[in-house]
Structures are given as C-alpha cells and as structure tokens.
Amino acid sequence: MISFSPIRERYPVETRSYEVPETVTEQLEPEERAPLVEKIKCLLRDRKAVIVAHYYTDSALQQLADETGGHVSDSLDMARFGYEHPASTLVVAGVRFMGETAKILNPEKRVLMPDLEATCSLDLGCPAEEFSAFCDSHPDRTVVVYANTSARVKARADWVVTSSSAVDIVAHLAARREKILWAPDKYLGGYIREHTGADMVLWNAACVVHEEFKALELEALRRQHPDAKVLVHPESPASVVAQADAVGSTSALIKAARELDASKFIVATDKGIFYKMQQAAPGKQLIEAPTAGRSATCKSCGHCPWMAMNGLGKLAACLENGDNEILLDPQIAARARVPIMRLLDFTKARGQAVFGTNDA
Ligand code: 13P
Ligand code: SF4
Image 1: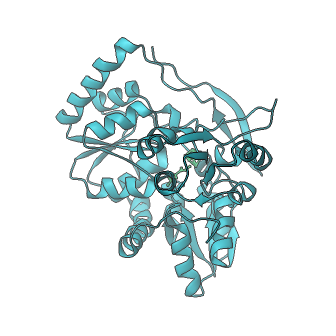
Image 2 (image 1 turned 180 degrees about the horizontal axis):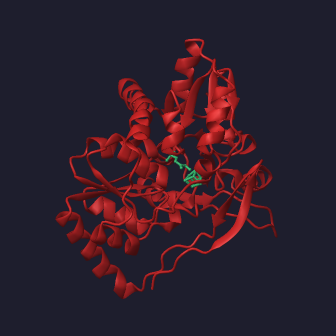
C-alpha cells in the first residue's frame, strides 16, 4: 500500500508563509517491493533513463540508483552527474530545485521526478518577485544564490553555489573586493560570512529540517557521549555549527564519518543520510542530533518532508507514464544556466572542496 502526505501546518518565515507537509514515507508490503524494483529496472532500460538521487531520499531509491548505474550524491554532484551522463532521460529523486537544475543544464534531455510537489523550504521562502526587488535595492552587489532556489531566482543571480562550494566561491569573490547579496539560507549565509569575512547582505529564510537542531540538547547529548565527534550541515544554526568537529555538505559529512578518527558520531543533518554514511563507515555508531527538547514537538523531526515524497511507486509511475516532467520557460532556463555553469566550471577548476572543521 502506498500512502501520501496530508498538509499539516503553515510555517511562517517573517512575512512569507508556506505549508509544510507531514513527513510520510512510502509504505510498501514486502511482497510488493521486489516486483516493483524489477519493473523499474525494465523501465529504466526501455526508456534509456538513469536515476540521480539525493542522500536524503528513501534507502530503497538509493539502492536502486546504485544497482542500475545511477548516482547518489550531494546537490553539486547530482548536477555534474546528470550533465555528464549520456542517458536521454534523467529521473531525479530529490526535490524540485534538483530537477530544475538538471533540466537547465540538459535542455535536450527529458527530466522526470517522482513527485513535482517535492519542494524545499528555502525555495518556498524566496519568491522570485520579492527576491528581484531585493536585488534591485542592492545594485552594487554580486548576487550569489544557493542551489536550493527556483529557476527564476537563479536567473537573477551572478553565481549559484552549493554547500560544498559556497565558502570557496564567496572567498574568491571577496578577494576581488566584490560585495555580496546572498539568498536564501540565513544560517548558511552567516556561516559563509564568518569564514570568508565577505561583506554580505542576507535574505531571511531557513531549512525546516536543519533549523530545528538544538544547541542545548546537543550539548547534553555530547556529555552522554564524550567520545563522539559531531558532524553538522551548515544549514544549521550557528550555535549548533559551533559544536561541530566537521561542517560541510552531505558528501563532506559522509567523508568525515569515514575518515575522522572516532567510532561514534552525532549527526546534525537529515537522517536519510544514515544509509550511505553507514556504508562509508561500517562498524561506526551514528547518532541522530536532537531536534527539540523533552516534551517539545518538531516540525520535520530530522527528516525532510519533501524528500520523503519520493518513493518506488511514484518513481515507477513517472517512468511508465512519462508524468512529472520538468518543463521550464526556455528564456528563464537559459539565464539560469549562466550562474550554474560558473559553479560547475569553478569547482572543476579547483577540485572538490573537502569538509571544514572548527579546529581550522
Ligand atoms: P547538499 O548539497 O549538501 O547535499 O545539500 C542539499 C540540501 O538540500 C541539504 O538540506
Ligand atoms: Fe530544503 Fe531542508 Fe529539505 Fe534540504 S532538507 S531540501 S534544504 S527543506
């Protein structure tokens, strides 16, 4: 049986508000799973398609991507893989901005998604018209936007960055004495500003998942596990980042779990990452970072409600019917392609960024 997500509540970000769905993962009966996986494998061959999945999606999707020559990675590497792979159809299991980035980079390819409603609180928190007005009020600033934005917002940007490249790119711009307008994630923006010293004005939006990691509860958990190292995604609040042994993109955190000298980690990012992190660090203990105090409730509880919308059933349906294709205004896409290509060219020239630490 497959279940879908009802809308649960409204979540305000300053004057902007949007709906956060309840996190509901696909429930399949054991006897439904194997035939569905076989069906998807046949459809992938038939449609000359490949799966590009994010680490936060269901482990069944990640496993299927691995088994069929697809790719599971962070948002930068998802974009790179789709750009370089010869398949004529990309099935992007993740959230909408990832599908849009794939389409912008590959206008000649068909890009499908299991669920087009799978968006991101950062994308929702940065409407294109308001963002454009913000840019108009700062004409002297270089516009740098996070990949977690719509095609229209990217079309207004000079640079697109991901968590794995943001510090390097802003440091490069700051060295050229460029002043930065940053959007949308205020926590990531603050982290970049602290690490580069760049002159930055910040948009005010946040990730519903990472914003909920709590510093006091994390301190208490660290006291219970004094031998654990702490891994934090930089979309988290500064008080949580301050306690990290490693800060970085999802790929960087997996690398840290594998390479750091510890057998126990407290992980402050979406719990979907545990599947690949455990594969990369077998035998090491992974503990979820706390999202709320005792008796409090959490909105996402450490798992992105939109990433959870991806499931095997919907993936089979979109491949079978050609549903949920990403279609973009060609002029917007052409404009958005410019700052995304800057990102790909910059990171290719510099090599992949490694994880940062608070010891640095
Ligand atoms: P990464 O690029 O680090 O995978 O981050 C994407 C994201 O949405 C994190 O919440
Ligand atoms: Fe967006 Fe946060 Fe979900 Fe990542 S985890 S897709 S930033 S809402």
